[in-house]
Amino acid sequence: MEINKVYFALIIFLVGIFLGFSVGILYKSKQAAQNSNIDQKLLSQLEKAKKIFPPILEMRSVSGTIKKINKNTVTIESSPPLNPFEEFPLVRDVLITENTKIVKQEQKNSAEFQKEIEAYQKKISEQAQANLSIPILPLPFIEKEIKIDGIKEGNIILVEADENIKAMTSFKATKIIVQASALTAPPAFNILTNGT
Image 1: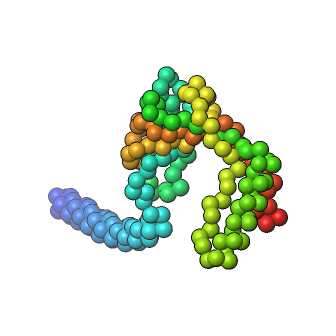
Image 2 (image 1 turned 180 degrees about the horizontal axis):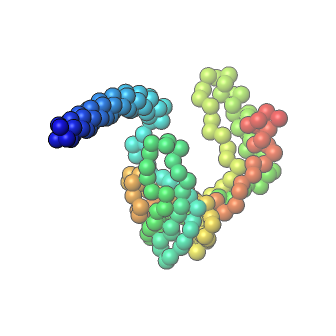
Image 3 (image 1 turned 120 degrees about the vertical axis):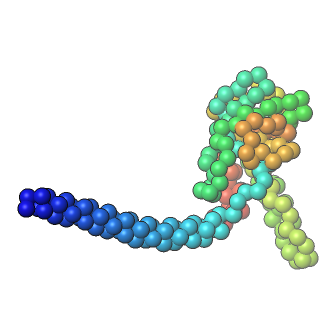
């Protein structure tokens, strides 16, 4: 009789393990199906979001802050891309060759720029009456060519290249535009662009 009780207890124990295991598998498969549905919804929403941010197919220029200058190599750090789905290097080495043009933007004289704005406004009215295209707006700065020793760490620069540099961490520059300090538009430019 004692042996029958042991067998009975063992059978009940094994049936309990089997039922527990079966219920666990069923629960996990149901949970996996729910997770799969959630994953599909997230993927669908992700694809919709990607359409809002079209990919940058090619980059031939990059701007950034100069972090280091070592002979003919300038290391810059750029801001993260506006498109959250794009990945490209934030730190790049820019190689300066004998063919690289380096210019520094300097603010124009206010009186000179005022004259350019007045001439621009006159040209706009003339061309509007003749149904011609709108002329190019004068810029509040000029570009002066400088040598490599005219650039310093901390300068903000725009670097142009002859090739696609999107994924490159090192490339040859064809032109470097240095903005040594923040440019402020002369009053004439503010009136023209803001209307006040």
